[in-house]
Image 1 (cartoon, rainbow, N blue to C red):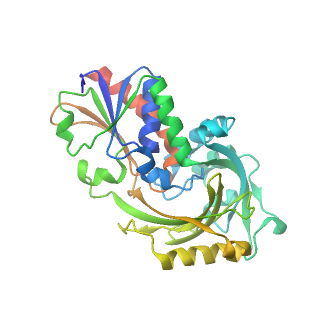
Image 2: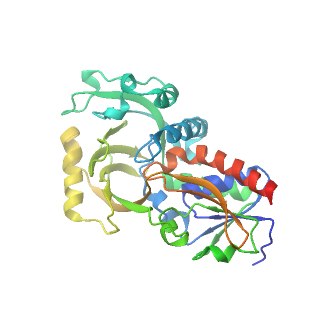
Image 3: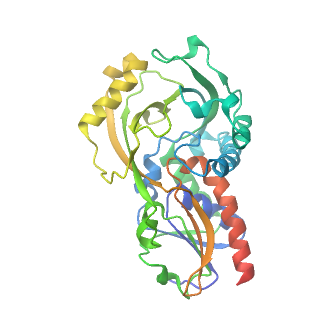
Length: 332
């Protein structure tokens, strides 16, 4: 393997890492993505893919990143088969954070970016929901989208390599800049003890005809309810369990997820189960998106801790990564 000090390493092959790598390569940098797992084996591949800020702080910055990503994803939705992105109408039910009149100035930009956001009529709400908000947002088929990002990166001259980086010192003298998109791996790599998992379990069932997305997720709740229609099936969720490291689906939890969703869509009680999935969201009190020069002399741009909003903020964060890499390379 030939690497020289003009290379920008991006550590992590999930949606945050691949999007950052695409943005950097298309900005003219020579980019190499180093990932322990293939894209299909990352947490991003398990994600439901709804574009909506969720479990991410600070919220004001997350909204700005989300607005940028919204516009990029909406453009990609012109080619859903190739990019995995579709614009889909749905309902955010009984979620206090989805009330425009209660929002402060930091949230206004997000609501302005969502086409047709409005209160749901009673006949638009699933059974058991008293209120909600209607919106048309990007819904991302994550496995297809990750493959799209890899193709786009390759077309821009980037390289994806299966390789585990276990210490910051491995980059010393062999990379101009390292962009750290290692997600939960940053806990050991940096190390950063503030990074922790928020476990999410979901069930994929044969879609009985649900065409719109539906979410009921109170802030901070460990159990959520959502149904996201994807080309490969209807994604039912879910959980958001702080500090839970288990990647094994729990049959009792899966049964409860289906039961919660079936209260809103009774036909789901009889839907054939296609798969069970568990992902560990890389949470942090605040997203870390900063640059620092480590003792070995290499500049590191950290971009991790996005919780449950990786696909939602990826393009907005990638813009900041490009800006920071330009700055540190100019200072080197």
